[in-house]
Each structure stands twice: as C-alpha cells, then as structure tokens.
Image (cartoon, rainbow, N blue to C red):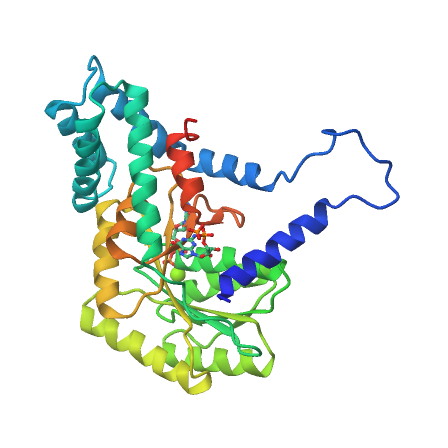
Length: 351
Ligand code: GDP
Ligand code: GDP
Ligand code: MG
C-alpha cells in the first residue's frame, strides 16, 4: 500500500474514533446525531479556499455566454478565452474546447447553466483520465523503513511551509516524523523550518548554514533509521540558476540518501506556487527535466483566481497532485481530491 493511502486511513480511523459516542450515552433519536461531518467540512473549507478562482470563473463564464442560446463559434471562442485567462494552459484548454465542440454538435441548444455543467463534466472527465495514467504515488511502504519524501521547488514556492503543515498532520496521526534542513543557503531558512518542526512535534536535523545539503540529508536518514522514524521530509533549496546545477545537487542528495536507505527517496514532491499561474507550468517543466518528480503540491490557491493551473498541470504533467495549499495555517494543506476540487469550482453535479 502507498504511504499516503496508509496515512489517509490512519487519519480517517482517528476522526471516526473522535466522533464515536460513549457506550453509556443515552441513545439519541434518529437524525439527532451528526452523520460523519468530515467530508462536508472538508468540502466547505475547500470551497472557501478556492472562492476567488470560482467567482472569477463564474463571472467570466456568464459573460462568455451572455445573450446566447446556442454554442456557436463565438461562444467557443469566448469559452477558450475564459479557460486561458483562468490559467488552465493552452494545451489543456484546446482539449476541453474540442470536447465541448463535439458535444455541441449533438446538443445544439444550451443556456449558461447547461454550458457550465458540460464544462464541469468535461473537466472532471479529463482529471479522471490523467489520474488513471498515474499508477501510484511514490513507492509502497516497507515494514520498518522510513518513508522519505524529498521536497523540491523554487524559492518561495511554499516548500518549508508545506513540510511544516505536513509534519503536523503526520504527527497528529501518530507517526514519528524527522525533518532534514537541507536548504542550507540561508540561516533564516533553517530557523523557519525549526519553528515549524517544533510546532509539529517533529525532530529536525540540521547543520550550519552553508554546509553540504547532501550531508544534512545523510545525517537525517541515519538518525531517522536509528530512531525508527516512520517518515522523513527533506527540505531543499530551489535555486534555478541553471538546470545542470540543480540537477547535480538533487542527484547528489538522492545518491547519498540511497546509501542509507536503498529505496530512498520513495517520493519526490515538487511544490509549485499556484498563484504564479503560467509560471508554475514553467517550473514544473524545469524540475521534471532536472529530476524524477513523483508528486505535486500546489500552494497559495487561496487569494488567487489562478486555481485553473491545477487542471492544466495535472493534465499536462501526468504527475498526481497530492496536496493543495489554501492558506498559511497548519490545517490549510489539503490532500487533493479531484472530485472535491471540481465540485468546489463548479458546484454539485446536476442530477
Ligand atoms: P519555500 O521558499 O519554498 O520554502 O517557501 P516558504 O514555505 O518559505 O513559503 C513562502 C511564503 O508563502 C511564506 O510566506 C508562506 O507563508 C507562504 N505560503 C506557503 N503556502 C501557502 C498557502 O497555501 N497559502 C498562502 N496564502 N500562503 C502560503
Ligand atoms: P478511483 O479508483 O478512480 O475511485 O480512485 P480513488 O480516488 O479511489 O484513488 C485511490 C487512491 O489512489 C487514493 O486514495 C489516492 O491516494 C491515490 N491516488 C492516485 N492518483 C491520485 C491523484 O491523482 N490524486 C489523488 N489525490 N490521489 C491519487
Ligand atoms: Mg524554504
């Protein structure tokens, strides 16, 4: 089983235990007790985190179809513009438009609400397809071997924050977490990570500023193995000065880690700043060329209308989106669920 599937299961078991009624409690009338509030609460949090993207999309869509009752060439043009300006990316936009065109040939008459629901269906379908081509995230969990996640991405993408949030969620689920401060370029970066590690109740392994990142990674894995950690998160510096430099550094860190745990890193998570729109695509391109990336986290989707990047990136890169960041708080890192995501942007399916 994949590590994060295991983690999700642990979290769910824990949530169920917390909502369980005491045996001596007076039985309540049907409906008086909340039925599993978890999924609804998750959906609400996601809806509010993606509010800007959603309202942007809505108003643009409304304008695109205003005063029209059929999907003609002009509506399709407008729609294309809506998707492009919502940062879905050209390639994916073209794909979506082709699908809608094919459908429009069948169902001529269409009002705004119908168009929206068709768009919703097509995007949901597209995300379903990119999911199918990605067998799984990272490697399966091996008994007694820490699961190592190397976190990469450009400066400011949200790596350290994501590691902090993730560490907090993992420790809360009862896992022993080690963090390696392998972004050694700035002292402040190490201190920032230390604050998160302490808050999360995780152990951080560090060296002085300027030391070799690979050496920090090595120490972290040694210590994690000796102390029987469940998971290791390795922070890295994301300097994109040039691809060769980046590639060499990441390769060196990987090689050194494999000396301690042959299967490490079981996962390489690329963190992308979703609020940069098209730039996030470019970063994804650079990093996937520099190293093998097995999962994506897209941050800062709150406070931006560029949430469409998630659709385009998961379609184009065929690398599963594992998490999305919708705020700076510990709980504002959400395991990505494409159905919830599409629901947050387009509302419920129409029955
Ligand atoms: P790093 O350089 O990749 O390690 O990036 P940091 O983790 O230091 O994050 C850069 C900035 O982005 C910080 O101010 C974070 O608080 C902020 N940040 C990270 N994730 C999110 C998010 O999901 N939402 C918002 N609003 N801010 C975020
Ligand atoms: P289904 O079989 O199409 O219903 O797929 P599920 O949504 O049940 O996925 C099964 C498991 O695969 C989930 O628990 C995920 O952890 C994992 N998974 C594989 N690909 C993805 C992806 O692209 N995104 C997410 N969030 N999970 C994925
Ligand atoms: Mg950092």
